[in-house]
Image (cartoon, rainbow, N blue to C red):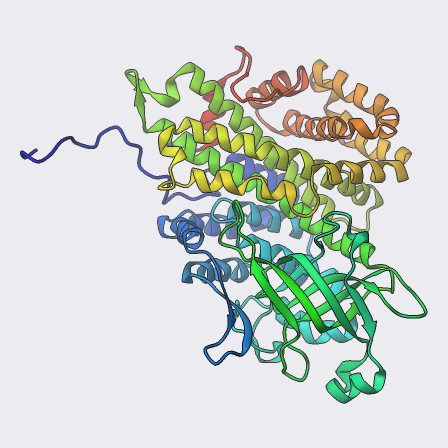
Amino acid sequence: MNGFDTHEVLNQAAPFADVNLFRCDPALGEALEREGAGWAREQLDALGATLGRADVLDLARLANASGPRLVSHDRSGRRIDEIEFHPSWHTLMALLIGAGAHSAPWQDPRPGAQVARAAQYLLFGQVENGAQCPVTMTFASVPALRRHPVLAAEWLPKVLSREYDPRSLPVAQKRGALIGMGMTEKQGGSDVRANTTRATAMLPSEAAGRFGAAGEGAHRIVGHKWFFSVPQSDAHLILAQLDDAGSSGLSCFFVPRYLPDGSRNAIRVQRLKDKLGNRSNASSEVEFQDATGWMIGAPGRGIPTILEMGGYTRLDCVLGSAGIMRAALCHALHHARGRRVFGRLLSEQPLMQNVLADLALESEAATAFALRLARCFDAPDDPVQALLGRILTAAGKYWICKRGPAFGAEAMEVMGGNGYVEDGPLARIYRELPVNSIWEGSGNVMCLDLLRALGKSLPEAHEALARELMPAAGLDARFGDYASRLLHELPAQVAEEGGARVLAERIVLAVQGALLLRHAPAFVSDAFVASRIAEAPGGAFGRLPASSDCAAILARALAG
């Protein structure tokens, strides 16, 4: 040291980087095999190596520090409604689209395709989450687009393309396309039946005069959307009240950014949302000033059409939250392994071991649940799996997404002040965690959806849950009692709306417990059952009983 040096930097853990995100997560690899997508292991191993590179992880920092900017007019005063992004955003989008995170199960619907895509999406969730929003909506739009053969013929080849093309052009001139969604309005929020946006069928002569054969079924749309996700998308699916003489009700409309004649559609971006998190991603408020859209699905059946999409977007909320929690765990555990406190590593301190092991259990259980849920989507023609997927999507989106913010706060606390400042990733991760609980149906909406799903098919739902839970009942008496009580009390709980959150929590914990008991090492399943089944999980992490093998749990949580 020279005379101007005040100190030497010591005892600071290196950043968590240059690690294979797939290879360091044994639980993810095991779930991949178990749920029928072991054939994707090599591909995911390569993806995990790419996503764990320091330069790729840093793209998240850059994309969030330099978020999108609305350019409403060009320099000549023409209305353009363009969104400008930092180059890091486009690099992230190219990675996601190039990997097929928006399209792989539709292009190659082999057994396990949804599970493989879920594992892929969970890995991407450990890097940057704003870019996952347009990918999720594009992915979820495919079944809806297939309901309109004319639109599907033109749009699906671009939607399924693995070329990311951010240029603002008519779709015929593009190599790839993105689809967004716009559902909620100022006065309604989750209650989309309160929407006031209206759609009126164009006269056939007018539509044909403007667009030729492509004008068939065109509607004029007037109204607004309070949350219009990813306004730079090439088209959006929206809900609007049908204003035709013969029918009424909310219908689903496909609203492209550019019309078939090459002109811009009359979608006016009022402003971008200034959000708590998800800051790399553009969300907006828009007005439709005689915009043009084409109906998807039957008149007045917009909500069922959108609900089909909602199943896939809600699956991605579960996957996204599981991925973010995994990222927070990795950063916290890596820090604890490289930081000495009171004469020994932070990861060797018994109380800190308890906290980290508790976080590790939560993360592994979320991963196991998410991939099991994805397997339900791999079997759409199996009525048992379809019903189980309906139940677990609603319950899982409630519980796993709800656990996220507390998880992120605890991981941040492990790192102390280093976690709280914007120099590291934990502050961004923490801000990101609430969005999946809010987007695509809040916690209460999900719990009400769970009650509807159970109430419509209670005997079949009871049987589907029993088939999932009871194979593990004999492996642990505590779990067996918990699962039996849940199944016995199910009819009464379905009838009690005020207890719907408790029911959703119980279902998810039971499914997680069954998966871990049947497939995870005993030191994982025993600690999970002791801390979440034998007693309520509580409001803080670090409550594992003394019998828990925290060292073994942590060795598994972030391998080699």
